[in-house]
Image (tube, rainbow over all chains, first blue to last red; front, side, top):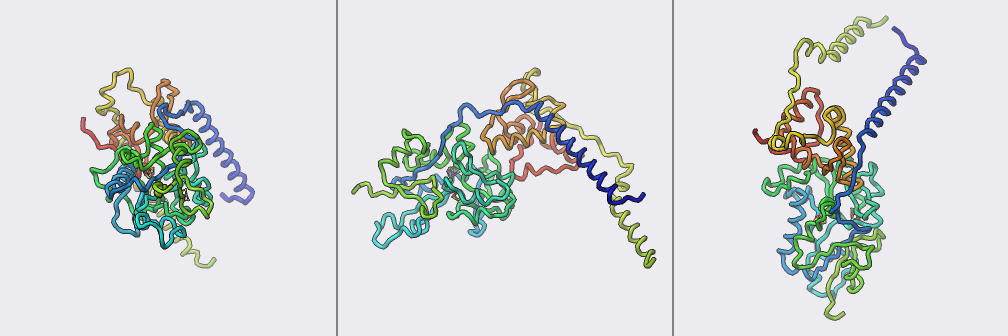
Length: 268
Length: 135
Ligand code: SF4
Ligand code: SF4
């Protein structure tokens, strides 16, 4: 049987229409079961989640380790050991690396050498979201959390290039062998080779009415405070209106939602 | 025509390779998948409550669309509770925690059919599959 171009296009056209019919049929099917999907009643809500880190209250190495390991355990973050392939959600950094351009020669020794806890800043104006071609990275309009939908990530790493804070990690290899079995959180997925990840402000814990794992882990120090920036009566707002705070790389205009109190209240 | 012999031989080889899987498997009976619904959790439920989030018929054909919608709802909209259109009951939407809590026998419940259909979902590359419990 021979087929000329015209016939071919006709058949192709008909099958496309049939194909659409198929998807239409499917969406009808969907309607028949798309019952309601709701928020859990115990979920914590805010219009703009933010974190305040009072560095002065983190007085021992143990505090840092507790916060970091709570986060990394809760989210099955692998410990790969090789800095080039490291995956990190919450980590320690020196003042000069965390706040480049804001250091000066005569600053207090206590701050110069103090480690700072860094994480994704959940920027109000996040460049990582702007560059993501698949919308795997998006900002939740409801509460300002910058999310990473691992299902949609194609591993292009544009977001890593765009984020000026180094907040994102790429999985160069399957993370499973690097998560100790006894540390595994059975309720949270691991990720897989080829996707980018970062701190998510513990959206999965907020949905259950729980505070972020790092905040919970160092609760007794009150060093990490998490709350709603849009609510004038929230604890974060009270702290920010009575203490001097700084944010990372403010000159870039990304508007981080993580604020640092660097001490100095004694003379304030 | 030039080289018609070579072209025909080439075509025959091509057709042979393309259709190889069909006649290779022809006549072989592949055992029908034999799904199992009994897990310790399901057995502990009273008979009347042994109902999935939707009807069995729907789940057979539509579980992939349902899971897809669940995923978008949870990750992108922040909604985690699913109201069954079948029973009106509320369920937390989670493959790893809800589905696999009842259907902890992944080998018999998921793999059996997926292997038969040669469908390889990559859910388990990220989601932690349940430890198989013997009955
Ligand atoms: S810190 Fe980086 S990854 Fe996080 S929201 Fe800002 S730009 Fe995006
Ligand atoms: S908010 Fe959650 S995800 Fe982010 S650093 Fe803290 S524990 Fe980790």
